[in-house]
Amino acid sequence: MVFVVDNTASMAGIQTTIANNFSDLITSINGRGVSDIRMGIVEYTDNEFLLSDFNGSKWSSNQEDISNEISRLASTNRGATENAMTALNTAADSYDFRDNENGAQTKHIVFVTNETADDSGFLSSTLANLQGKGIYVHGVYQKYSDTAPLDTVVQSTGGKFVDLSSPTWGTEISTVIGDTIGESAGSVIEDDDMPILSFQVGANAKDLFKVELTDARAKTLGIQELNVLSTAEAQTAIGSIDQAMQSILTARSKFGRYQNALEHIMTNVNTYSVNLTNSESRIRDIDMAKELMEQTKTAILTQSSQAMLSQSLKLPQGVLELLK
Figure 1 (cartoon, rainbow, N blue to C red):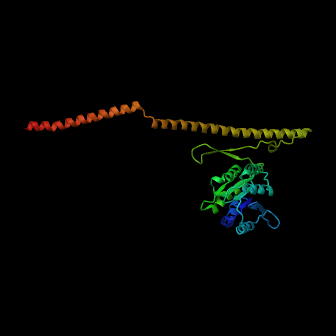
Figure 2: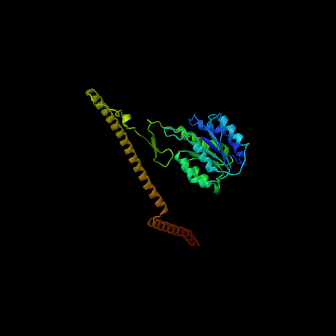
Figure 3: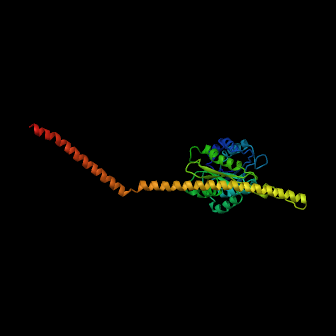
């Protein structure tokens, strides 16, 4: 992880905040299972691009050394030109980032500035260099129209962004960038481990269907190196092949169950979709014939009630007439 830090005149307070929150950043990364972290710092201002020295090395695994160096930068601010693209190229070319054979992402640059890139003409070549070396670039800056080149670098390399205009940006370096670095570097899938696929099969977050893949490579099945030069070896090879075939048949049976289950889920989802569409249609589209019948029935009942009420009022009037 290399910090590329703008060291122009207005950066002192920003650098101090990073130094103060640096311990939390490392704690966040360690919390994701990463115990071996190499760190470096590139400071840039005007046409100067300086790599920090840690006892004769540009790398350090001591978080206190890195925090102290960032604090030192806060007292040495100078200049006013931010050649950010050249600084990123310097970091990519000057540091021997380690490659992880298991595919975990271990190359990260944390880029800190309060301005845009004055050398944005080098955007294309810088981006090609970073992507070619598989480096994630995480940005800590305030986003506005002129920072579009920085946005492109962060987004195109798969990095995360922390906005300096946020009142909590200091802690967000840990919760956003630190968690990402720790997760991407700590989530290692061993060569012989097969990932578990999770399919979203329902409307709710926990409606998942998991599929366990099977490693069917010859090495895993035990048939990578078979020898039939002698009768005994041939018999051993036949036994190994029979066992491998049985493993494959078992795996095929498992995937058959997965397929049947997924087809059943798909049928249920399709039925649910049809029912939902019909319900929505009934709610939205009124059945005119039924509604007219209901209206007619209501009118008849209303008129009948009025007629009965009229007749009931005439009865006491007739009695009064007789009494007269």
